[in-house]
Image (cartoon, rainbow, N blue to C red; front, top):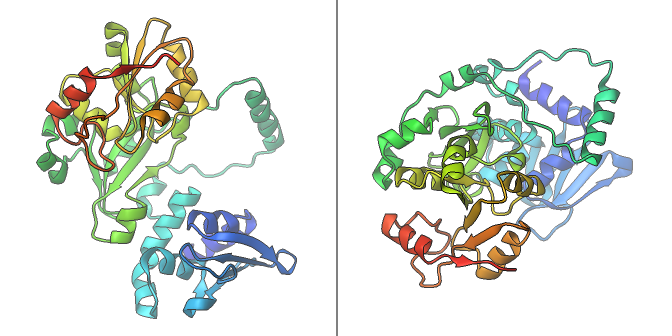
Length: 354
């Protein structure tokens, strides 16, 4: 049996058709014919029954309004890569498979590289007990931890600085420090993600290929997935500097921490998103009552958003960075315009009293 059919059957058995359609951006998703058929609207369409996927092991699918028929992979190829002809669908099949496996965490089907750390599934006679314990942990406020990966996972990507980032101002030394590498198959620059103890828990990739659809929708994704909402990126490096300076700079993206570290602001951590989770708030509080927090979000976050977000961190000294002088453009991060602009923003931070 081919990987493609195995993947289709697994999606069917695990009842993940709706998950796939949601990940594609489809809307109005519903089940018809007693659950035998899923229908949905295209992300940019107005027909709520345009996309149809049969709830069978083969996942026979079609997009009625576009004349697309085949399997779930053909639907993915059309929505993500605008593949219409048979030749186009064949050319996009590997990319569609890669996207789907990443979304569903089916990494063992992507290629041999991802099988290096994939353990064979063992019988789990006490699975119900693990599930019960997990639910109890949630009730007790205990957070599940990310799985620790062997460092050998990084061997497949190497430690290879990316010329594009070097030309943007990220030094070779900085890129080496943060473990920048390359995943040739997915056309992504990679970097490892660690927990607060410095243990490897994931690998993130930035697309550098020529497909505008992928670059627009899936510029960054986790090649080795982890739960980012229970961690702060770069905390293991920044922690001693945070303790020494009694200050933590909180930013949105990992790349921003690279520039800040290069410029000497080594007390920086990233939420890897645009809003903190409850667990991330708890982590900040646990850093200590004497720590000052400086929140340096991207340009597209206004002062009201920053105040509302930061106000969730109660009982701590908090500052925000807001670009009132329009030094940044559009969705720039605080470091995108260089060192001088960053220092100006940092020196003019405002205290949040709410």
